[in-house]
Length: 124
Image 1 (cartoon, rainbow, N blue to C red):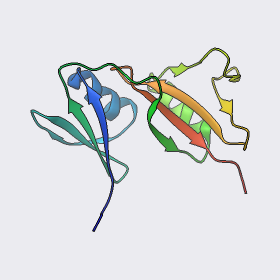
Image 2: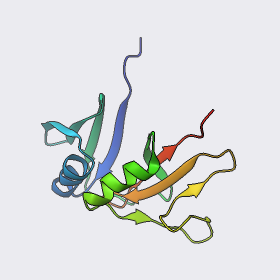
Image 3: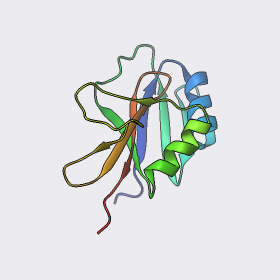
Image 4: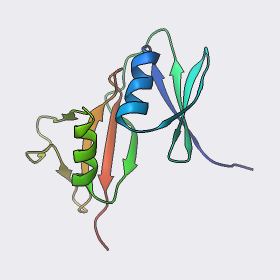
């Protein structure tokens, strides 16, 4: 019954969101309609919903598992992505937090203030 999941993120600034997700994150534009910008996010459809008003949630809305958080962060930083730090989280100098189970996580925001993350799972 279900096929592949679709990802949804709200935007009030579709041009800026398209530039961010395409040029900085490297996703491919599929469609730019009056309702959404749709990108291919490594085989998943990412729909940037065009909305008139948006207050970004105070939590992560979308994240990706990566093999090497340092390599992924270096690539994104070279494309102009800035990483977030949160008081009291115990992040390292690069903004990476290590979870109690050993996963390593960093955060960054899109042009609408939606919080996105990268996670490197611990070796097993």
